[in-house]
Image (cartoon, rainbow, N blue to C red):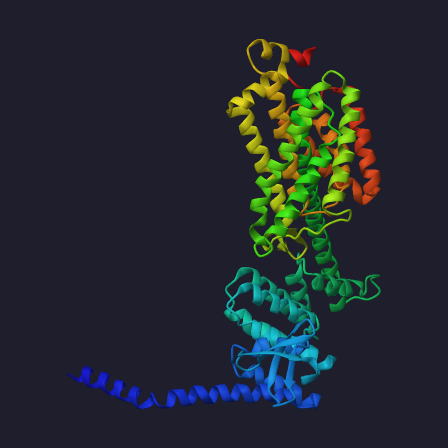
Length: 545
């Protein structure tokens, strides 16, 4: 029965302690409130002590209060000296109790007094906030804290990093902490410790590591003296060579990514033109304006869904396809169908249509560029390493372009419309003799190509300004892609778009954006002299004729 007696004793002690628990919680809340109130002192020296005391309370709200002080959002209310966090709302401020977070409504600026700080306190605040964030549950917050501490490394920061290293489990954060400790060790009077720090920083892509190693490498670079410092300088130069090699590889990867991103834009802009030009032989100079219509559709959808911007693109994509597709069918039925076999007149007619569409959006929407917002999930970038980051909007557009390509390929390969389109593109007369309504195929093909142009406009609205002239920037590039890849061949359009996009990005650092396009155009002209039908020539009797 002794275990039951022990359990009863524990329960009795707990019951006796229950009345003291609320009192302890209230005392903790009071201590934190007092620590927040202490920030109201005028002396900067006393304020520095108050900041440290607030951080040592261990309260979860400490970071929010300290960050508010750092960015100038911590005030006290003149009427009752209450410490508040304030957010500007037009001419007034929306305030919350700094200690509890309790909303206190809005008040005028004249009724508040800001808690002032100087540069020394700002440095102290950043270090204190970083120290608190080192214990955060989120690895991203801990990584940001380590990077912040690297900007102001001192003995205290080094000790904090060493303590954090022992408990850190995230691989990337551990690597950043190791680099921070090595940066601190570069200031050690012991040459052996400095040499070990240089070894730890070899291959590091952190800008701070590169800058510090550059300073070490410059010492005794002429070989004027020997000894420990020269050994450290030699190791630093070797470490810098390793870093430069890795940076070159990352710059190459970044250039390839931006090239593929540009290629995905060219693919979306040209893929609709490829099937209309290949099937119908029509040089559609209004193709760029169909892209523009898709972009403006995205803008109008966002206006109609102001509170759901994160989902507006999923509505804009089918809407832009329908709008641009219907405009395309109307253009084909109303103008182009009467001009088959007369390419010059078709070119002039579609050019006139492009001017009409430009004026239409100027009159009905705006003559100025309009702003299309990126949804939150397309904002920001994904950091691969400190030297390489990939923006989400370009990454998603690259994926989207490949999905559109795959969907169009499936339509042309797996559907009745696709079979008829391929038949008409290879031999129009034979397809017509077999009972295929070539006029219907022409209208549906032109509508399909125009709809894809509208979808391209949705993607472009996330990368560039939306205006009446935006389509003119892509029409020439679209024709270059189609001619280079091979008329009416989707795989040729894909390879051509990606190749030209990457080539442009590799040429731009040396030749500039304009000259790079000129060089690509010259290359295409020379290429089609050797291969007039492009990379992937069209097959069929019509292609042979």
